[in-house]
Amino acid sequence: MATSIYDFTATSLGGEEVPLKRFEGQVLLIVNTASACGFTPQYRGLEALYREYLSRGFAVLGFPCNQFGAQEPGSAAEIGAFCAGKYDVTFPLFAKIDVNGSAAHPLFKFLKREKRGLLGAAIKWNFTKFLVDREGCVVARYAPTTKPEALKKQIEALL
View 1 (tube, helix red, strand yellow):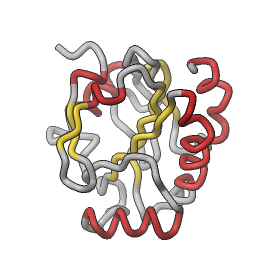
View 2 (cartoon, helix red, strand yellow):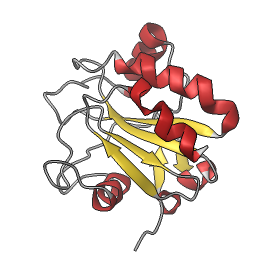
View 3 (cartoon, helix red, strand yellow):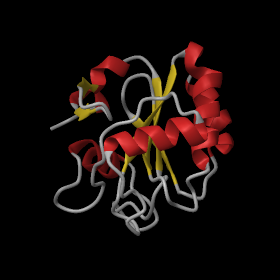
View 4 (cartoon, helix red, strand yellow):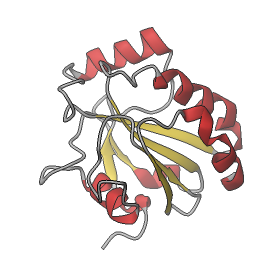
């Protein structure tokens, strides 16, 4: 049984298998994202956090998901072009995944087991956020309505 996020691998938006151990020792904000959601402008805030804290050992990891209102219908190339073109996203983006149900990515099964939300383990909508400490442990879960800039104090406490 997994004990940290470092026990998982995910496929990058470009198709590369990425062991999350690559991020060992960093504070992470892991987010399920979508390009056609009312919360999509949060990409701007996520990128701002990434740029502000990158040099201190922080990263945002974005996981596109099409499970909520089919709000991420694009291909990997379309998602990448949209994020880079509209929001100047430079943080790591991964291949589209499921976050709920039997086909949920193992990483998100782990995240949900570690920190339940208001609706239990299930993720309610796009832009649910999980804060992970330098040891790979999930320390907090935030609702889609929580703006990225509201997490600065919690991120700084872990850096």
